[in-house]
Length: 263
Image 1: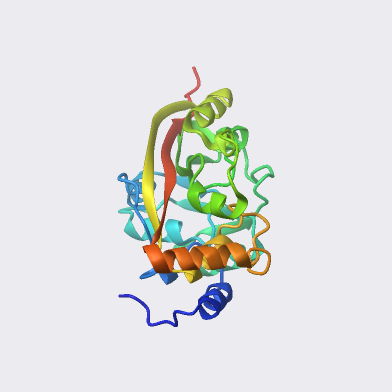
Image 2: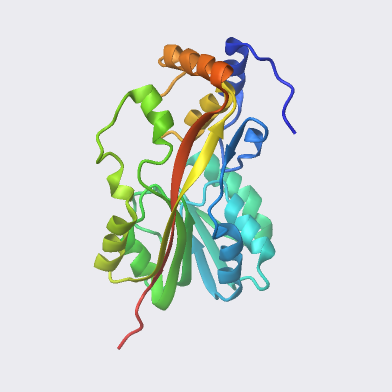
């Protein structure tokens, strides 16, 4: 149901700037932004994978919301479940959320080695890792183990990014291309079993949603502040008021990669 809210630019911007950004709960956007979901249903699919795992790791878990959802729907939970997260507010949030699942949350920077032994897990998952560390993923997987993840693809929501930053080179964001990630996984010794990509519609219905989104997903416009981009925010507010929701497109891909068994 749409929120009751003031329609003025200043009020909407202030509202979007005040919403807490911890975790990956996007329920605040209800009624003011929408995103088409990938057809494969990652969280539900992860629940199925967890049901058959004995030791599972969720990398860059955010606030733990996706892992909590999946564990709650698994028919059988792994004997060991761990998660990593690099941002301190999310570490605290994930720890509180996942404690009742018996999941240990380990604070680990995104670009650091995973703090686990070789071959510790038969399942490693991740939803929207900033950069997948393929050598480390391969190292902590046991032979025959699986990496199952949903990644953000190239030039995701770039219509919005380019509104603020201007036209970007075609190669910007190409490191996230599915085939480049396939190459990275294979270079680390993994066999890519599944690689599916989709382009999905995103709509922003007001400028508060834009402000909160750019504060929450900080790598979209890395230097974003309301003050620095007030003119571009006001122009977008007026465009939404005159033309309706601002439309962009996200890109997502599903990755399943397996570590070969010893020969």
